[in-house]
Length: 84
Image (cartoon, rainbow, N blue to C red; front, side):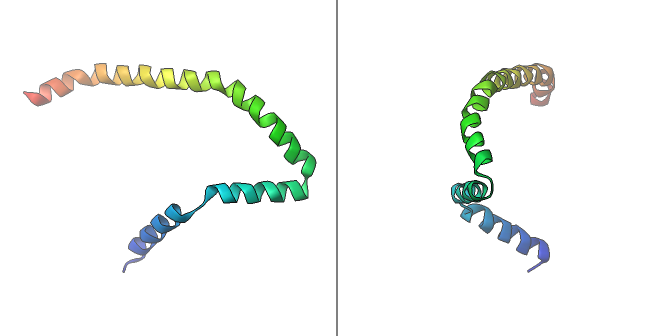
């Protein structure tokens, strides 16, 4: 087995078996032990930043739609010529 094939198969196995919830929980426990005021501040401020970011997410979704429409309009003549 070549090195590239081994690396690709190993990465696929690692990605499927990683439990990100447990890693996040352990990171919070370590942060709480090392610097509990920072951990509590992060827990309190996270919902506020999440609420502030909602309009930017909506704007991102709208801009994605606009760029998708422009891409469709620009590539339409080429797609029509391909069918001929």
